[in-house]
Amino acid sequence: MADTSRRALRLLSLLATPRCWSLGELASRLEVSERTVRRDIETLRALDYPVVTVHGPAGGYRLGAGHTLPPLLFDDEQALAIAVALQTAPSSVFGLGEDARRALNTIERVMPARLRTAMESLHVTSLRNHWEFPAPPIGSETLRAAGGAVRHRHLLIVETLRADGTRPAPGDDDFAPARRIEPHHLVVWAGRWYLVSWDVADGDWRVRRLDRLHLHPPTGLPFTPRDLPGGDVARFVMTSHDRGDTSASWECVGTARLNLPAETVARWAPGGSVVEHLGPDHCRLTIGAWSWAGVAGLLATFDADLDHVTPVELRRACRRLMRRWRAAAPPTPPSSSSVIRYGVAGGGHERPEGASGAPAVGPARL
Image (tube, rainbow, N blue to C red; front, top):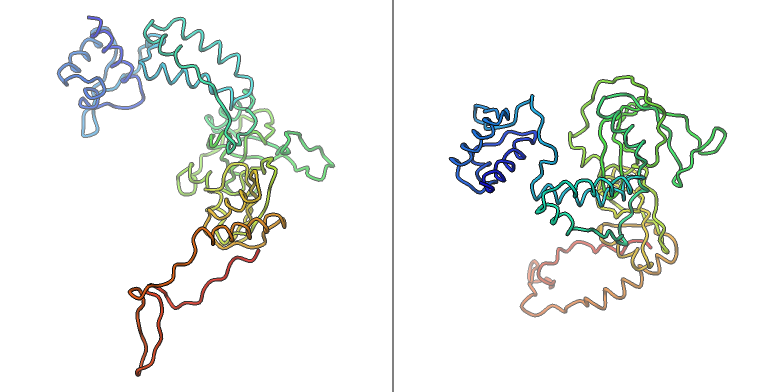
């Protein structure tokens, strides 16, 4: 009987999600036969849960409206997900530390013993990696205002803050007037919150760091949603070079011009780097590391020609790495079996097999 009740609760949890489940999917998730699933569905209906049958090729079962689910209806996976989420949320949203701890304690107290044990066993210690450059945590009021504007499709009036979080005043060299934007998406990437919006004055899409925005009071003015170019919000954010990112505080920071489009470099550049658009096939990358050799090595990962490398310490590091790589992979002299002859009218010369005959490309100007 206990197994049947536990399975029925698990089934109710699945049906409560905003999707339609086929009979086969439910049987697979519950690890029982389809006949057992049908019987459990009838049990739920007998308890007045509105389990709706959806007919058609994409049909199945879902929970209808008009009934309030019992509180804290979680399975093992959901309980662990909540435990992890509540312990890691304070790292990206300011002021949630104490509230998240209280919420986790409340949930643990009312959980069944089996789930409470699982949640209590998962205490997370979050450590920062050298290559993680999250933004400062977002204030809960800012997050609530931005999220509400996205959900209700209301215009926002925003000002851009400095990298240190201060707000330029009229008369300052970097002061810019407030802008009206249409917020469409909130995106979290690499520990940073981004707001994807349509800039009314510019007539173009922009990606803005939420921690770099000062939000004016809600306008309540509705706007008509627009179609995002390409329709893929993740790709749009990751390939946008002008996201308001700033260079991280490394001991060694250098720049170089790369023969690659800015959107390509922006997609793969590590956190804490800055990409500047210079043309359709060129961009400038500012990047840092713990050593000048580290900066040079990161530039090499893009496998593209580069020039305008600064400062001089970075150029010296590039030369050192060239010597090391040449020593690590010395040229192999061609063997007799790998030489082919070609020519005309009894004359000719030799070249290693696979050589193209094209002129060699010289090293990047450092």
